[in-house]
Image 1: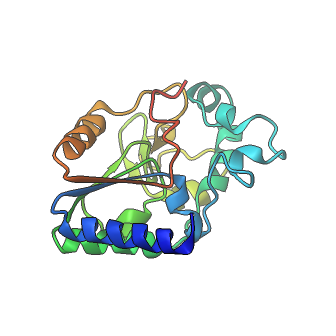
Image 2: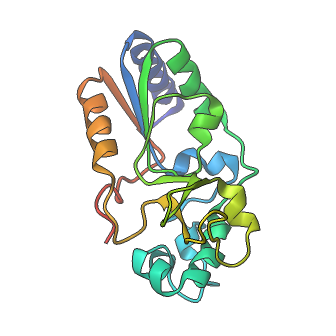
Length: 205
């Protein structure tokens, strides 16, 4: 595609976005790479690294969490990027929402950057590293608790195991989130998909 055609496509997209009144954005890991968070499946992605004792898909599975809890958290802490900041994509989507043109963000990411940018209606298909809960009493903990509390984080109230509120492999997506995301898409007059191959829009198995 030559430069003139590219410019025409960009202008057409901008005009369509300007005319839209109910935009929904569906995004994945590629949205956050500009924030220095690596994606998973690209040549330089997390799944291509060879310095893990097991494949990342195994280490992020429910059975690995249960059977090898300490090793799970050793790996899980490497995918928490606390210092990451929203990039231009996150900020633009939040601006569109404030303008009343963006109805929702649907994201596969677990980094919480859309909310950090100011987006209010965000459907997190795979959960968030920002939320962690005691499996026994339900007490809430943020990502600092996971990062700073030893090899295995236990609840300070009851001693129960604290689990990240992320959807692991072998776990199903939350149906309430799926339902809200589907409704948002059905009501959209424009759907923008970015930074995702959509290959993990399924039950993680």
